[in-house]
Length: 277
Length: 354
Image (tube, rainbow over all chains, first blue to last red; front, side):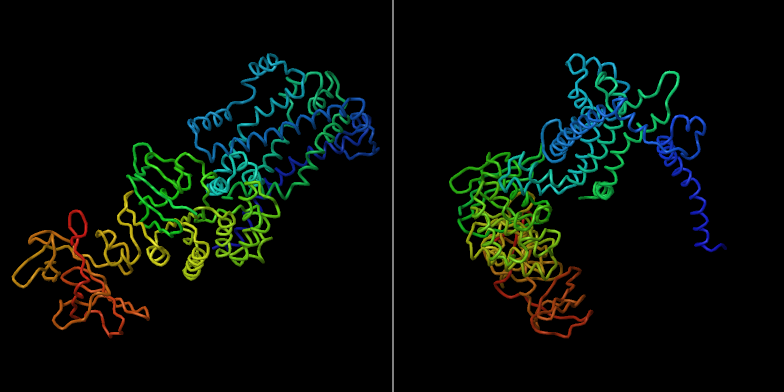
């Protein structure tokens, strides 16, 4: 009979092959973007897959200034920041109400929110676009902020409701007895207690909003966001790949920085959300 | 401080009524314990007094005010929860001062009140700590501190000692009692532990299935239970309750339980042939040569006394002896109930006879 430890090691070695391939598939695009962003266009055409030979930062400068990525970056920051703040505010309030307060049709409201989680964005694009025009929000940053809030709210509300439902109900009751009004209970007790879930949610929503192309393309047609700007770097017939790669690196950088800064909280947040607070 | 008056209080969840018209008067400064088995409605009653549950019918008054429709914050009450319900993100001092902050009290006044409460409860060294850094007993004290800083009219305790170990429970029991003697604030305390009820209460309210089974001073309930339920619930080990039938002859009155004839003092309501429950507390059974024969089943020495489980014509009885006897399982001993310590209840209603 084979030694069980030896067998375990063999299984691990077998598993490591697909895992390594998976890791490679994630790392390779990053390598491709960074490597090519540092090449001249000539260098890229001569050797697409090789390592950079004549190092240049021109692509970054060009993408940032001449391709308007600087303006798009500001748009992205404002829209993402605004939407994430609004999402956290609304989902925390809604989660508190749905998890801890008793009111008629509470379950129905929750089910409707859950159901809207199942509807893909693409299905509602036409009515969504008409609504945005009807509200006069086309080409406004506030329009995009509201759109992101609307599309990402169901998941956020679901997460916050699940988190708050896991907290002992007595905390709210204690605060009520201590003289706190409902909004004070939310502000002084529920909001600080929801911190781990809110951090997770903040990161996820930042990621969704920052990386979105579709909704942004519809709502902000003149003032573009970063991702739409990058998509526009692709020409109809030819594409300056190093320029595009530089744009991609610039666009991804804030998210990577955000992840590195909050890495600990993200992991802790996911873990805290998973077990009873 | 204030008295609490509960009149014909009912609570229903849809068609299910869990409190069926409860009346309780709690005098100013009194320590009242609501006790009963799980699901008897004691916690619901407490939460209704707190304002955490709505009132289906009847009234709750604190002092002269009917508080039925007042939110918890306006009832001038403080509550200690079973799981303490401390705010985990606030320090001990912030936990204790939260209610005062909500009342927009001056910071200096908050600090002084928190310091005074911390002093009373021995929490001074822990004011800057977070609840997670405290032991169970310390957390319980913080929860009490949070209640006393407000100087409320009524304290409400919802099974506050259930999460503590046995030794700490006894210690905290004494501390809560001492605190009450010091502050003399009207207190309503819920527990399912009848020992807690007996040791702490000025008055006990025994509840069962949403009704009040009996209200009275601890020893009153112990010595003269109003029904078989209270008789069985109050006291540990529980009162021995035997089904029987009243028999009369020239010599007097007795209850026939199986093959045994148990003498009872004559009184009204003891007509021959009436089905009754015969009750005798374990410590009221004494050894007697001419007593009823019983077989020893189990001997449980506790040190200060010995509990003996006995079998009398197929039924189990418990007797408690202060003296140390060398009983062994299988021994046959003779017991006689002490005169005047016998309780008789109606078999159908469970109510006390005589």
